[in-house]
Image (cartoon, rainbow, N blue to C red; front, top):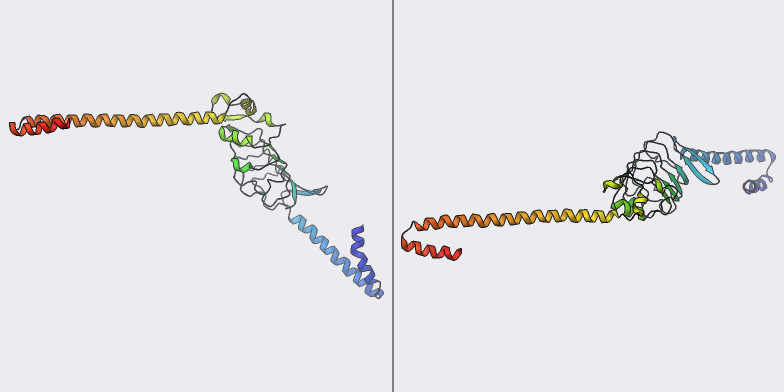
Length: 275
């Protein structure tokens, strides 16, 4: 109400000095223009909301509801002042680079229960500082680039994904603020060690298993086998080379024996020196 008084009070002082007919005309014109501006503002708000979503203002915070809308990709025309974005229960397959780069006010992002398999390196660029909750549970994620979730301070949910438990996953989880309510539902769908398949990841790590040590041991064994193979090839070649030269020397010696005695003596001394 005070806001309207601020708008209309100067106009009222100005109109009071006019003829009654002019007063009516000016007031009508003023109200028309103000109404038009308000209409344009509302129209701009409607246009900025994706047609497949519902946008609402909840206690001064923009909430964009796109749940269960059969979406196969993230909408590109999201309101820039979005605080909460619900994209759960859709058919989204990947989170591309810069998908949320213009949503600097985003605090809650729900991508759960989709079909996400790939998350690109700069998928969450622009929202890392203010994001409080990122829900990626219930997808088809096997691995995530460490850079994709770097600098995220909010809680992250990764439960019910077919994760591959290895050194890179262990190092990434070490840097994340996992939601304690869902952390026990993060399990190894596959693993560098068969005995850990199907087990909760936290339980495996708490038992003292270090996937990075396993990775280093595997690499060391592979390097040892490779070096042994090269060493065997070199030894085989040397043996073959020596035997081949000895056989040539024997044949040459037999040939020299068939030559006249003077020539044989000279050549025999030369061969004996070589052998």
